[in-house]
Amino acid sequence: MWEVNMLLRRDCLLGGLSAGLVLALPVIVRADTRSEPAGRLVAAARRQVGVTLTYDAAYSKLDYPGGDVPRERGVCTDVIVRAYRDALDIDLQVFVHEDMRKAFSAYPALWGLKKTDRNIDHRRVPNLQAFFRRAGAAQAISEAGADYRPGDIVSHMLPGNLPHIGIVADERTADGSRPFVVHNIGAGVRLEDVLFAYPITGHYRYRV
Image 1 (tube, rainbow, N blue to C red):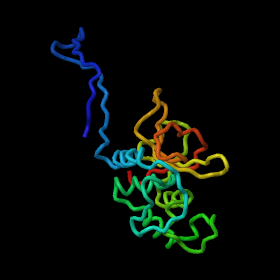
Image 2 (cartoon, rainbow, N blue to C red):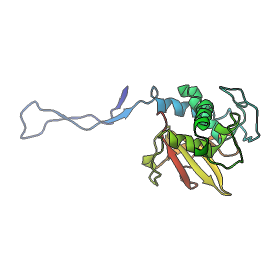
Image 3 (tube, one colour):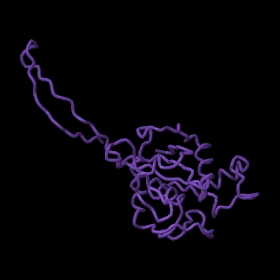
Image 4 (cartoon, one colour):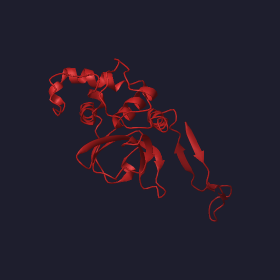
């Protein structure tokens, strides 16, 4: 679906051309992404703002599939997992668990585990990074805001070597130079101008 915004339309009859030839000034055409996967993913992420109000990294026993902690709390990865479930019916708890079962050694060995744990594996940033890379979703890391599309996933390294992850939104800064990010960095899910606030460690475009 295309939405056409007419900024200005004026018929011009140019001298020297045959009578009746009318030229219209250019118009701006904007794609309506509300029905597209990326648009649905961003909308699902934004709906978490005001719902998830705290950051809680405590280990929890989860149902499988579809396991989650109460939505008023969570971590940065929960923003990604919930958005994919709500918008695209993709359960990253299942996808990550099944891929780790097939290729456990391809995932980071940072926690001393010898087997998968479907309660926590999908809630760890390095595991999501490995999954997206293995799924062929990795994109170039760039310093240009225009290279990051709505629905893209971006991971960062915070001070203290703390991995972080969020979803690129469809809203941009006032100067249009970069998009906002939906994430939970410690005070609940928020829409903020943080794309280049910390070193970017990964850029992914998965199923959008």
